[in-house]
Image (cartoon, rainbow, N blue to C red; front, top):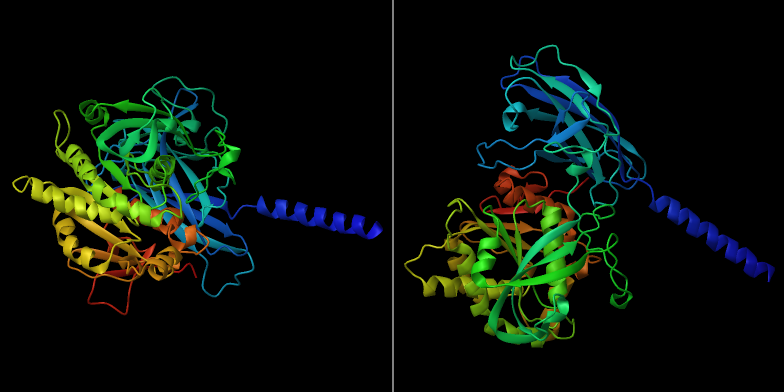
Length: 517
């Protein structure tokens, strides 16, 4: 009995130590210095950040957010919007996003201090006329999104009409009282915990009066249903790349802790199109082994982690949502092409009051790429005189055979503004399909074509994340790359890091993910 008690105490100590270690920060902002650019044209603020990377951490993500300090006693803040620049982006909260990396000669098992400088041009900010006070909020996270540290106190900077005149640097109040419109409290800089996710599905309606996931089954329907859903996102505990949920589905999802679908609301096609805001749209086409719930939650996570400012639409075809139903899911692809074609036509047809600059960006994963390629081909044949134009298209971990991909890719390249192709030789799920079903999915290897951006995701992938098949949504570096693509509209050569050019294929459009060390 004494030995048992001793072993029990040892296990308790080990568990306590594990809990304490698990609660540590992956990276910490230990110092922040502000330096004005008095003679700069245009004027800018230079922030020097000292980031402490903890043992084992190779990199950290830094976000600098700009805000206006309002009120007689500087008690309110309001996010600053980005001014339209060469990339054409405007009307979104200003966020400067960058990575810092551990020096190559440092000991991986020790903490290391990294210094990074950020320049924020006032020309990039939508500032009011006359004097105003700017504040910057800095956030730091481990590169895997493990732990966000507490936001720093706001750095308060005076901006005048005459440029940089006797500027003050001071700490704005850390505890701000509730704000009155149009100003907002500091908490408003946090993303909302509930998001509207629009959907279109050719799943059969089995409970017409239900406003929940029970409304749809896994069988094919000849009709395309439209609607929207509300998804809860656990913003307080969410880690970039995670889709937080219970260990076992039958334990149930809890709001505040897990992603969960709160309700569904069907809409007629015309009403669905009118409900969509007038800005860019992100469409997600899931792959095999996805229920309707899986599709909606993943769409919400992608929109959140990519920080996409516009509406997100999930196209859910009748996958059985089972890892054992691969062949059954394959049989649902061809009958679902017409439904996705209809959805693309609906989203690409301009409606009254919307900007002609609105883009439809598409992310297709795994078997969903079969649907996308065939739907684009069908759409081009259906309306040959209509010049439909997609925005940025991401082809991730494509479960498409070589012949089908070769035949359909030209149609996609012709219709899209830019096509990005992510592949990984470490994709265990595609390898398993290759062995079990004799398929030859292209997503395991590079594919080169004019105007196709080919990106090797091996260094951003892990077999522990969805068997190496879910890197498109589980890797913070891939998510950051997609952020820079669809939000900043940057070409791969301007997204370094997180990318780096492949020195072995300089004559082709081929990139890899930069290694943290």
